[in-house]
Structures are given as structure tokens and as C-alpha cells.
Image 1 (cartoon, rainbow, N blue to C red):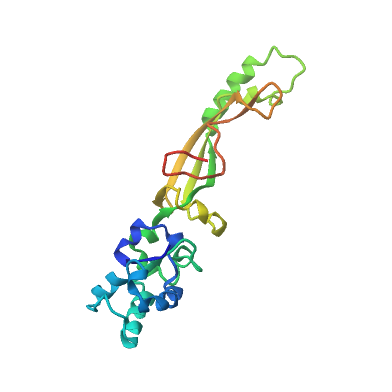
Image 2: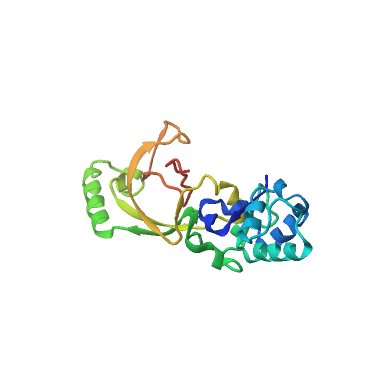
Length: 218
């Protein structure tokens, strides 16, 4: 379904569902013979002080299309030819307001910091506990690193083109925002290991994490 909305409503919309203003103008040209067939078109006409219940004259058609091409009014549709989300940072950044800086995305790993002092103390304690295990080289077992810690830093970044189908479900945050996750090396459940357990960093966090509006991560 297609509909026109005023630019002021852009913050309530999924940018992947808004057609580029460059292509939107031609897409609405056929509706001027029956303005009621495109939701929002009569609102645009009234906004331009034109009668909304008659066929639009050619001169007025061009004026209305120019308002579309400037982005004063936007065409929302299920499958845009060129979604505004792909152009917002370049050609149409001036339309975006807050949405240029805040929107759907993902958490991307940018840094891992290991706490050298605390980890040294933890490993010394583990070393003392392993002295009775003759013939084993220290560091050859995961338990030798038990309770060491590290901090993952992730940054909120934009979705790639092949990820845009996730935009409607995604949480919205300011691009560039950072979050830190403290992990501890411990033995935990692992369905891929014989015995069902292994030593790994917990909580388990992927380098790329998607956060959704319902509060879940993936």
C-alpha cells in the first residue's frame, strides 16, 4: 500500500519503507486524475490550497511534484525502488532531523580490554591450586584462567543493506553510542562439547549483536 505523509512525520516511520524523493515524484503522477486513490494526496493538495475533490490541472501537478521531490511530503510504500535509508546520509540528510543520528542498527565490537593486574592475581591463585597436578603444564587447561576478566566495547552502527529487513524490529539508539560488557572466564554450559560444558567468556556475547524493540538480543 502507498500513502503520502508530511515530512514532519518522518521520525515515526521505518526509513526502509520510504521511497527516495527523486523517484517518488514520478510514482505519484498517475494519481492526480483520482487523488482519493492515494491516501495523503488530498492532504497535500489542501496543504497547497488546492481543491482536493477535482482533477488536478497540469500546472498544479508540477508544483505538487516539486514538493515531493524536495521531500516536503514523503511516499511510504511496502517495497520502495530506492529506500530513503540508503540515501539519508548523503543526498537527503537535511530531511532527517533526529533520524539522521538516531535509528535502527546493531552493536559492533570495536575493542576488548583485559584487566592485566586483576587477571595476574587470579592466575596466581589458580597456579597455587594446580601445584598438585603433576605432569600438567600450567595454562593447558581452561580452569587455569578461571575468574580472569575482560571488557568488550561495542558501538551502535547502522545496518548494512542486506540487513535492512531487520529495521522494523530493531531498537533505535544514537549512532556511535558505546556500551561496555564485563565478561568473566568460567566453566559453563556448551551444547557443542562432549559432556555439555566448556570454559569460555561469560556472559556469551557475539562480536555483532542485534537488539530488538522487545528487549531481546540476538
